[in-house]
Image (cartoon, rainbow, N blue to C red; front, side, top):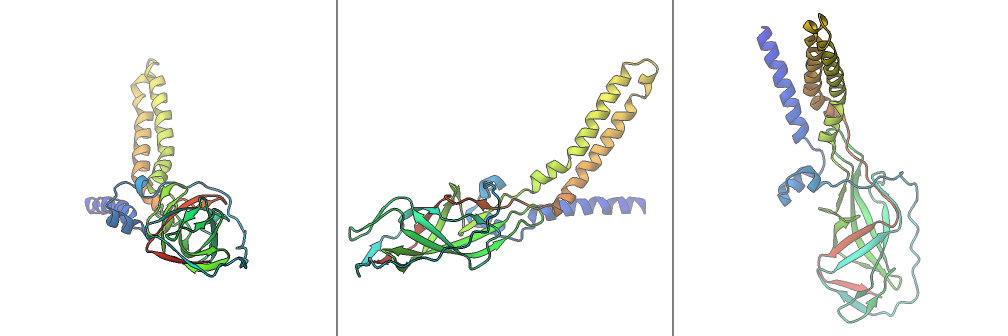
Length: 262
């Protein structure tokens, strides 16, 4: 009976660790399968942290400088944008986010769309950091341009945020399962180090040296138990937040030829 219970406990720990590694409530698994990328750091690079902002979207004023003409931006055109507000995982679905282009653009007809032209996107999905070390998510669809104050629809993909590669328009917070697991083993490491030093000290003292193995034995047992339990406890820890300050660079790419009014 005891052997059976011991086996069940071991299986529970192993299954829990497997569950923690594989379980993901967000887009991570889809990213791995679609892009065939291995390693957490390659998929979800860490993004800089900043305090969440309560700044609200400023209404866009329509200009009267329109020429009444229509221009074309070619499919595949890459545009570097700068955010006009902080972007965090606190943004709710439907929130409007404005950007300006960093460099001027030349249309197929030869017209120049100057730097500083307004672009606007919509937050289509977001969530806070989740259990199993899963990071936060902000999904933004940038689909409007205001050339000469005239609004036009565009279709784009978000390629980079803060010079980090992005998939499916999703900005992801850092996944921290293994990092949190490592942190949870810190107490075991400290106890083992302390008991090891105690055993070495005792070993140099006559008579007492015959029991010098006791401290390090106890420390080894504690460290082993700590190492076994920490992957399970890490299931209940969360990943990183997303907080990109105003002025963060983004790169978008046009998915098709876009007609621009203005």
